[in-house]
Length: 531
Image (cartoon, rainbow, N blue to C red):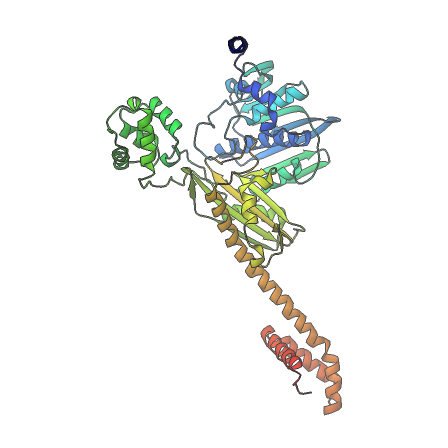
């Protein structure tokens, strides 16, 4: 009986075939964030705009991005995204848009919005899945020629299917990319919408010009500063964060001739002395070929790394916004009455450098609490409760800083938290929440607390000024009654006495008024004051 079952199972396995990554995500598109039609529009816009911002920044061009979301019919939309980036050469266009996991971003350790090579090609796949329409791409590198493609994805082969292709002279000098999707979706304007994404993108990217033609009208977000953030540098992996399986693969792929040279050339901040120390603690010959290293040797090296004090990764691989850009972005979009901005020193998780930045804005045009989460300058609008940033905000004792709280702070407050890293640890492929590494939560809370202290001082001063102003009003309120009483006692005219009282009150320092009022209050409460 068991043998028959095994043979039947073997027959099924023989008939089984390998599936491509495109075919996998076609059946599991929810893993990429395409959970519903409202969210689908947001994801497509997000992937396109993020790519445009990355392309312009890498080319050191101030971004000018045009976005259009047009309703064609019920639950069917045209999305157009155009940028002024460097453009894409003709040979690369079908591969970039028609092949999942194509590109170099997945393999390099450099700060950027995209990390996996899934985003824009998955948007192409969602378009063909829901409407059957191909995606149109127009690109020019500024050489006077414009390349136009219409394409789909062969999900079984994970290859582009070119429907149309043409090349023509540019009507006017232009460089950049324009993408047009026809997709199924629903457009709504709420806290997790395309509009909110564009608004928050304008906050975190104040150096960008954004024009958004929405189904309800045009919105323009002008840049607030003519300066790009510093360009991040690419980094080699840090040995502290490399696991056994990855190290084993790297050992067998390296061109290095010895284990010690492998350690010093394939990893950042590992010199010859440190490499020899690791080999010594691991009990392996530093001169042996990496390909001769056994699984046991790899495990020994990983254990030895924990016993050696390694230099932290360099921080020039990070490109934080900086306090000036955060201030410009928040002032430009929120116009607050008070703003505190903090940038923490860089820290490390799993060998990857990262940095936390926080902005807390209060009052002005802010009418209700607003919490903005960003990773490498990209807004995170979904899975708020699962995010390390939200947990950090909830972990701060806001009452200590004079702010009312109900799990999250209340009042006219906007809190912006930005994490930048060469590899942001997202909780899923949809890149909607940051994983709760203890060191990330710790750094976020420290930044929040430092900014909250500044806000606390401002609010305390504001309350004190309001309190003193109210006391001044009390003195003015009783000036009339006091003037009449003194007129009866002294014979002086009440009008003259009122003028003198107003003059004294106007010239008195707030602390003098407060002290006199406190003395009067104390005498009244004690019952022994003289009339």
